Image (cartoon, rainbow, N blue to C red; front, side, top):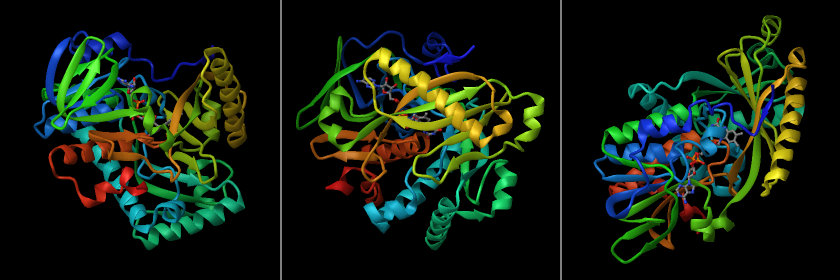
Length: 411
Ligand SMILES: Cc1cc2nc3c(=O)[nH]c(=O)nc-3n(C[C@H](O)[C@H](O)[C@H](O)COP(=O)(O)OP(=O)(O)OC[C@H]3O[C@@H](n4cnc5c(N)ncnc54)[C@H](O)[C@@H]3O)c2cc1C
């Protein structure tokens, strides 16, 4: 049976997640903390962990359940590169910013994988090559230039010939760019594991605790909930999008819906026809597509985008229509498995910016806040990067390079 509107990763029941990590009910009355983290997705959980590890007293507030936002909709890939190609980022944001972002993100991806391993978080972490396919000749010419540009900056990138690429991907290809440092994970377990590690270090974690607004004086910031006020030295906004609380920042982001499907298990005959299935696959085309193979011989294919439809019936219809379209596109890449049923199809917001880079850092109108929004398709390594940068910010160790990740680069 096909399930539309539910992510494949929704296996960990919300109640079990809450019992495992959160501290009972929503906070009540007046509290204090060094830093309040708003949002308990991958980024907020990572920030709660790195901030408490640095010795700060942290409260994390999640409106719903931990890891139930975009984190739950992701394909569970730690991607060591941003959404946009280096050549585009250089053009829009300049060479210096491009170098910082590409270097920092690669480092963050490796550091995140090693942290998940070191903490013993059971999230099916597995290192994998990331192969950016060029299905057509035009894409290959563009990708070859991209590989050369990355190599010129001593960034990791290798060109795979059409033959080598076909061996890795078992699909139509004119060549590909191969990148190191990627990994696949169970995104919900990774995020909840980081929240647990934060709690073990003393973070106070509250689910079903929606922040209504934040106010500040010259001295400190207050985070306001329905029944509580938390006064702190700083706030990490890890909500992925500005949302109603920070709607003044809406003009800095663009939100569309992204779609993903998980197939039924491949039959043994199909498995023989689709190669080794070891690489994480994406495409060097205008609109990204992502493919990862799951345990149990299923495939997860994602990437189509459409407008952000507000109303429930229109959104449900769009999920059905677009996830079926994704299945069709998947079958064009792998004709040997066409006819395989869709098991899960869902949608999630994809929040991006004009230059394809996120906003990670402070904003001049919010003196106590550190934002991590608009992480695009590549949120997990950026989430870790944001967590580390926020920790430097609140321990007075921010670097000049950190400034290039945030609103400063647009001012
Ligand atoms: C189909 C698809 C596949 C993707 N695959 C990948 C991938 O493989 N790898 C990758 O890196 N990225 C991927 N992404 C992007 C990725 O999902 C996100 O960028 C990333 O998970 C965002 O994590 P986050 O913690 O920043 O946001 P979220 O997981 O959305 O967390 C934000 C949290 O804030 C909470 N919140 C919001 N407002 C409030 C409030 N007022 N008070 C309290 N809490 C609040 C929300 O409830 C939510 O839980 C994908 C995106 C899509 C659409």
